[in-house]
Length: 497
Image (cartoon, rainbow, N blue to C red):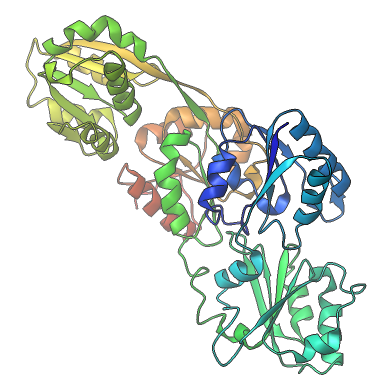
């Protein structure tokens, strides 16, 4: 018999998930997730976890609740560790209680992992504090999904004071407002509707009970929405911290490998962007190739690294071979600050670092130091350009290249939608080629595009894809260019920014 975790994934922002939820998701052998949980949390799964979508979009139920219960029971009885991922908190209008009772009836072990609930967090992101001293000393949460049928005491609701919050009630907005006004609530009571809260698609409309329906209709709002009524709505502009972020409302696609995406993703999230990760390349390590050079490593004058993956594959292999790096007497060199940082993390300070993330820049650094007959070792990707090795050989150096890894075509993540992407970041020619294979060239041409440097830019030009290129070929340079690009509508093949 397996076990089921009923996991609250939070309101939409992929980072509003608890540490315990992340830890347990990594243990799951299968997960079932719904629409409100989003796909961002799926990045926390292990590579072998099976994924089932059981969302219930308005008017289009992929699974009924009975079917979901039956599937949970079936998977658990097959011995799986099942993660039932639910938006917000499992027990707040999420039918988590029904699922728990179904599991209990079958004698299946389960555990509930609470989640950050949307009535509080979404309003936080909309600049609306749920409570405020002397203004709202209580808050009251209702389900508005079937407000015309629920046995809500509208007279009590209209007079109780504090903040009223309705979930899943957008289609019944007029019924909710009408019932409250008919039962004595002032027509000019502040009211707001927040759609897709805590995500880059967040949209907020502020008004009063007597005009919020008209304003929401003009703004073309649609579910999922949260309705909030009360004096705290008056803070929505003053405390509007989230919507003021420079990349708020933008969806940025990073098309590099999972490990390489992490730093850029975090910085983009901090700027208010929603991040779509499509790991267009996967890394296949072939560091066993180092074995045939291992007895000669002490003879090289220079060890040259052109990527972080090259650094990690090299040192990890030496460690597995129990090789003492103190035997290496050559000077270490690197392309770009990220590669430099990776070498420093191994306890070694590179002698030379190229300022730009291109082989030409490293050659410019090295040519003043190298001499004919120097022995140079380059552990690199099988797919990378041979420019540096060929140029050094022409200058009389003895160069050994060792393919310690290669990049292979990645795959589209489960349920990910490229249609919602505003801008795509390419960090190598390989990411360009692979993304064309995965999503199609026409889909890419419809987006704004940023290239990390000229080599990547040339690959985009081959396919007539317009792009912006950062002056600094680093993560910071790319992000600066994204911010610039999203605030300038003109997009040309190459922009000097």
